[in-house]
Length: 317
Image 1 (cartoon, rainbow, N blue to C red):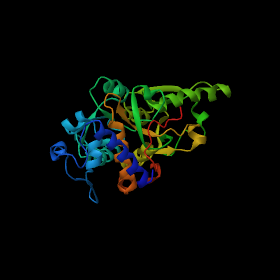
Image 2 (image 1 turned 90 degrees about the vertical axis):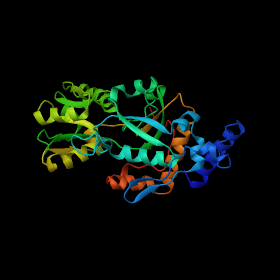
Image 3 (image 1 turned 180 degrees about the vertical axis):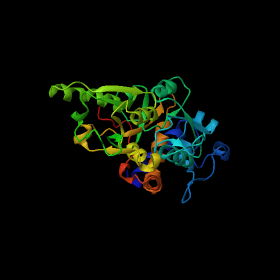
Image 4 (image 1 turned 45 degrees about the horizontal axis):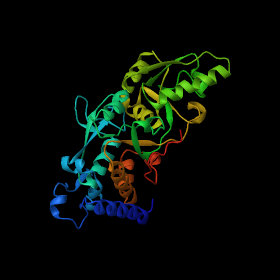
């Protein structure tokens, strides 16, 4: 979205807020914006300034609290992980982007761990306002939350070092045990792959679902599974960093992982806070437009998963 169209979206929404009597625009009394926080240093070379117009777009309840409660499933590196072993401090792509979005909105994005398969129910129950957890935007999930799309990455295999099972095409895992995190889009994709096994007269994939991907990695280490099916970005990060790169390799590409739709990852936003998704969308777009978004992705060496426009509910299926 060009900067001009972003400004037009913000102006239109501000006009609606002002004419409805909210009175929180930049010309409103300073008391209406008294809770807006100051600049935040997200990275050593990235400090994000708040935008009063974007702050004015936030629901009154969010402005009053000065924070957004964000659910995330930790660890799922490099999207979300702990800064050090034994530490409760969260870091990662999602965390840093969340801090940048919150800073641009003039509020805090407070991240809390939550098991992946319980994230959407927790948002629906009012425990969280937002999800940032490398979650694929899917039509079925849009019944629970609205998505502001922010990244796009495909699946990949994490295998033992050197790929001893010689997985080169997706049907190479037919009849074999593979790991996947429960409740994820990858689990659904694996279930769809069973059709490929049947079509070739091969036994079905033995799908073992784990509550955390770190558990699937342990199963791979022990030989309980021959591969772990997850985001290609996460697979590459684990293969590079675990045991100094000595334990795992990756297998990627559509031939190896099977066909998949181009559904992006989305920031899941509660439907109970009207206006919040529009504010987050506008803040994210402004970070895309000024280069801050790309700086975060470059810092994790994954600029290729970035997108140019912050869309809403852009899932293809």
